[in-house]
Amino acid sequence: MFGWVAGFFTYETTKSVVVKSWSVGIINRVAQLLIIIYFVGWVFVHEKAYQVRDTGIESAVMTKVKGFGFFNNNLMDVADYVMPTQGASVFCIITAMVITANQTQRTCPEADKNFNCSTDNDCEKYKSSNLASGKITGKCITEAERCEILGWCPAEDDTQEINPMKEVENFTIFIKNSIRFPLFNVTRGNIGENSYLKCLYNPINNPDCPIFRVADVLKYAGEDFNKISQKGGEIGINIAWMCNLDQDVENCKPKYTFTRLDSAFKNSLATKGYNFRFAKYFKSEDGKDYRTLHKAFAIRFDILVSGNAGKFHLIPTVINVVAACTSVGLATVLCDIILLNFLKGAKQYKAKKFEEVSDSVSRSPSLDLHQGSQMTIKREEKSSDDSGAYSIGHQV
Ligand SMILES: *[C@@H]1O[C@H](CO)[C@@H](O)[C@H](O)[C@H]1NC(C)=O
View 1: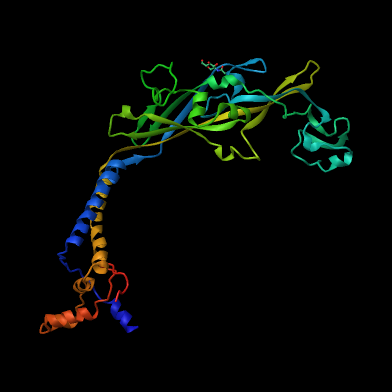
View 2: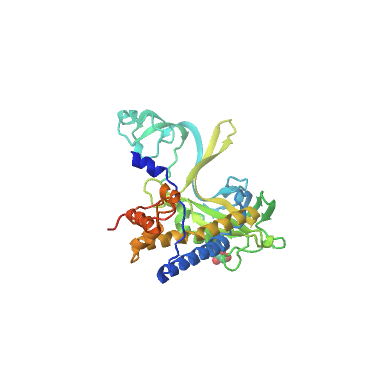
């Protein structure tokens, strides 16, 4: 216990030991050089640590789809196949539909095979099911071999074959994106001042064009149009703004990348693609409501905007220069580890590096150097944590 207390109340001070060793000298300089290269090359040039960064990008997206297609011999225009119609950053292009026309409120047999029956008893157990097209009444319609529902009839049969609208691949999506970096009050748009809008985006020949062909978007996302138009899916269009405002602001331009966002479920057996239902309602002359139900398979586009901007600022520059200068000193730690543990004559180095001087030494100068160094040798295995030098274990 006393030993611990005595050990705690000691003071350590550094003493410089000049080691005339080529190997440690070279290691020291190489380590310092690597640290300097890291800071200059990576931290300053690549990561631009001298800049302050604005990551809180503000963004507005407007979209417009154009094109005509044919579905079931009907011509479809934008109002027919884009949902929702507001032209927001998330929209669907309907590629295929199951249409159930002239539905009215009455009772009729369910269409789904999961609700087949031969007696009323079979239907009793489905009475609280959410999965039917209407409310199961509990009666079995024996001619159809299906349970009876109360609801919009006839029930939708979504097992029928549908031919997707092929023309969707030639539709174009126009994206208008305006962003602002509030910290620097810089506003940019994805359409150049003097660009005309008769282009088609191409990552190599026309990377600044804000008009995208659907088939191209799918191709860049690695998807096949014929597959995705059958079952639907979700495609992300990422607009990345990485701006260095130390350069001309005209160089602050967006980069577009494309991904399939629902790819986690692409091969899932339980749920595939993307679909939703909507209905159009009518009134017949005798005042009765009827509707046309649409089950729509759609490609959903999500426009995601991200980005940041950097500009020179004194504070991060000073902080990082100081950090760089301090870090050069890390080379000493490495050299100490090598010097005190792995080099021939490590014991002698250790003896020279850690020296204990007790109170009596300073009080009685009669004690000569010889005795001082004996004391040191006695305790040469001591390792110090405070001085920044580490010696691993006791390699006796
Ligand atoms: C899409 O456009 C190309 C070139 O204009 C045309 O050859 C092709 O038939 C079109 N695709 C469809 C499905 O109409």
